[in-house]
Image (cartoon, rainbow, N blue to C red; front, side, top):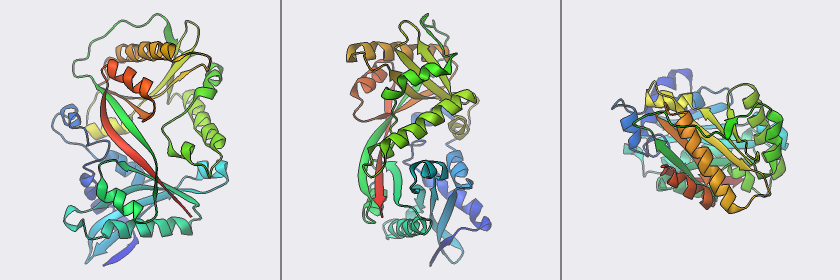
Length: 320
């Protein structure tokens, strides 16, 4: 048995192992099977990660048979901004018949050492909260819990056009978004890491948002009556491919407010924006939003708008 860097000849077998992501955000919710019309979930997200120029895949093999693999990488853009290399464990798979033998733990250990050789000072990983074997493999290698997060989803099995809110319009002047910088956040564990300059992490995420809006990859809506709230979203082509559907999939990224409004007004504005986007994008088969566990007002508002909890994940960190 050996643990080694994957070669091009390993690619097809590695991709075939991705079918064992049975607790990933793409397979945990069984309603996905209805959207895919019985075709199953394709591991398109894994292909994107494995083919990235910034990732490396390490395999465990025996007699030319791959038993499992781990994909790791360093984000060069974020690392440059933080002046500290941030490593990530992105994929971890062990064939079911080889689980419970410590192979996952061994792959994680190898991945950590490999990232250390690249100069990583911090490693992040995310997994399903119920994926106990993976969590044990990470914690036994020194990873510590950092935060939890949820995915709420609205499944649209009966698409019908609805009335748009007269006060909600696409943002024309992108400079308006700077007014919402103070309330900007994402369910990103690096914003909870005390060893980092969190303002730099926030700046990196915010600048990416603005850049993506300028490039037409992300769209923004504003509540124009008082200009107190905005909603940003994008079309998730990778998830659409995974579902093998010709219907659009929408991911809500942010619902942001001006700093001087109270909780009741936040609830009202979030409800109006969520209701509008469901009507505005009525032909989408799925609308989802990732939220922090502590955002109870937003969670309640999502539930009141027909969204349901589909997945809960945890972030763990390793510090050298």
